[in-house]
Image (cartoon, rainbow, N blue to C red; front, side):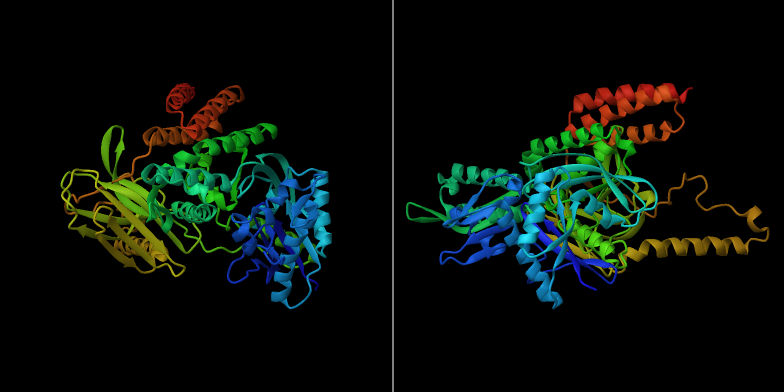
Length: 604
């Protein structure tokens, strides 16, 4: 069977994939599945495509072209060396590099492809993409919408009618689409976006922040030197990726500049909170697009069955939080956001070729993992709060860390109590292990402690806690952490059955061991142990209360009269909008109004 490949021709990065043994896989080059969408000429006139072209872009922009996708369909030419090229020709160079990568690994020629485009591309842009494929020696058997491709990776043979919201934030562009899928037919209901917004803009903001601080400290602007700027840009890109999973990132570059004959070194720490505050205005723009797409499709948030994240920039935790606040459901990124579209294109190509295609298999953690800490509940300390660190459905292997603080003054030890489950109350969850960290500094309450969880494919969980001020660290390894939840349930069930069988009166005389405890597992604590509190987030308490109120409203909707349902949905939208935009005063007012309405409906 002649192979038909799937290609994600992206603004910043591109990938090529194929279905093999019913599963899509992405072709790699030296272990990297991503080909940067850069084309350039070296000093000696050699053609550069991919990483080599990207590396020279900052130093030789006159010999390098990036983001050519933004010009597709336009009657323009771009200069490369002494020649001028149409956008289709530059894109064809990228497509040929991808084609050659696949052919080299398959050992057979690659002549046919499905190529993806944004849903908002017009006919001229789609035709230009097809022409680029033909120039690269490919028969383009299908031009596929990117959100359609993304939806195929989650369920290629969807039987029931489902609506998905695909939030696609790549390096250079953003778009959000609402698609409807049933019986293998996927229809785009609405699409909205911003072609001048992407992860590259996050890099620029972080670059300017770092350079401004360096200039304030040393009086040297690193942006004025192309080599220094290039080094800082690479460093902030790495820091941005690190902040997706950890609360702090260190940016270090030795001998970055010179002043008065003295070498200057860049050594700076950035917190996730600083970074998220920096990009918040850009993310607000994406939330406006989300609402516009819902309005264009004549849908409300509760009409969406699944939220899918596409694009590497969506790994930023704030994006997931904002989407969950606005749409009232978790955002899915089990399938690698960088490769999701290419894999979907391969699935469509496999379907066209008549290959057997199954859902993408991804190793994920089935339950959230986190620690017990103290949090505020109704104005009082609550010592059984569950703070998830690795969330349910996170792809494996996973490494995540979060910031916590000591609860008491002069607290020299802390218990790290690890649980698995989804409840905010650890007494509803299952303990998988615990250990003590002793010898902490005698300082006032608020001593920062970083807790990190590392979970591998074999279910081995490594838990570590580190005092930031001194570097004091302790860790524990928990074997088979993924299966422990089910095994503990099995042991409890076996114990209950043994008690039941031992009773002379059978089930009539049996009392459940948890009766009278409201389902809580009886505490095994002999004494109160030192605890941690979660790192502060502005509006955290208001957000928790708002989410609880929205859940209550969702439960009441099914038994609400049509005339009242419209009002409840309107108020729910107000709450979600204020929550997403972090307008805490408006959120409080909207919650109060919604709570009053729900109170009235409960009495009916």
